[in-house]
Amino acid sequence: MGSKKPRVLIVGAGMAGLAAARRLHACAGDLLDLVVLEAGERIGGRILTSEFAGAQVEIGATWIHGIDGNPMYDLVKKAGALRSRDELGSKSTLPSWERMDGFPTDPLTLAEGGLTVDPILLRRISALFSHLKQLIASGEIESDVPSVGAFLRREFQNCRDDFAGEWIEEAAFAMHECGERTYTAVDDLDSLDLAAEKEYLEFPGSTSPCPGGTPGFPSSWRKRFRQERCGSGAGSR
Ligand SMILES: Cc1cc2nc3c(=O)[nH]c(=O)nc-3n(C[C@H](O)[C@H](O)[C@H](O)COP(=O)(O)OP(=O)(O)OC[C@H]3O[C@@H](n4cnc5c(N)ncnc54)[C@H](O)[C@@H]3O)c2cc1C
Image (cartoon, rainbow, N blue to C red; front, side):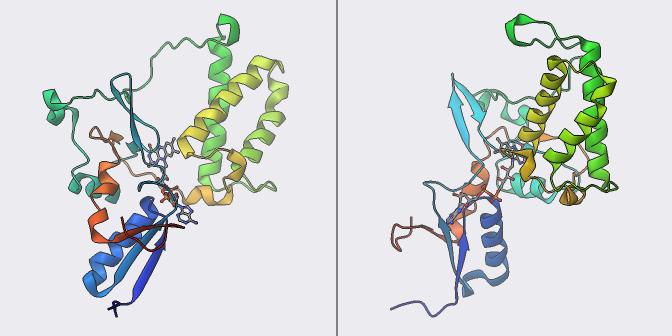
């Protein structure tokens, strides 16, 4: 006999879908027939831990950026996916590759062919990039371009008179763009809405990894709902 409960279908078992399922379950408990529909083979979406050369490697989300007052931090902790390096101690079987220990004071940057990049040039490009990011975050810019990518590019081109216009400057700026793509987890900075950037909220406090591996977090939620795969009929997994 079919269930008379209202059926709620959530599309995608990434963090957003799992968080929605978790919240609904917390509010309505078993009054709802919760189903999370996932197209892929696993839950977690852009959260995935893998192994390489005997070490644990995060392929997707790794860090909780700012732990003070961050609800993610509390949730991850409750799910048991968060253990400090000290707590892990000798129980850690796989060393984590991910580290965020700050930056060296005197970094060496090498370009193709082993060319050492002039640190003064790098500092100038880095300062420009940081300045542009601050402008974007402030939301106080009036721009006729829609995306973060287009804004960064345009401002860089406008500033190029201040530089010698060499390829290495272009490469240094592109290196920062690459870093920004990693940080914002987008393939293309042109897909980042410039106006929406000011809404991005970063919590204060330190940045914390999940030494136990991030997928432990979504997995701990799965028992609260049924998961179905798209195109595979209605069988729950
Ligand atoms: C390399 C990388 C590093 C990152 N590092 C961090 C970090 O350190 N800290 C941080 O906070 N964030 C980080 N992020 C971002 C973070 O991973 C994402 O913001 C977050 O996981 C997105 O969750 P989501 O549920 O919105 O989307 P997703 O994780 O993309 O989940 C969407 C899910 O929906 C499924 N789906 C899509 N379409 C359909 C459909 N039509 N039917 C059924 N299922 C569908 C997909 O298969 C997927 O499983 C990183 C991302 C990447 C890629």
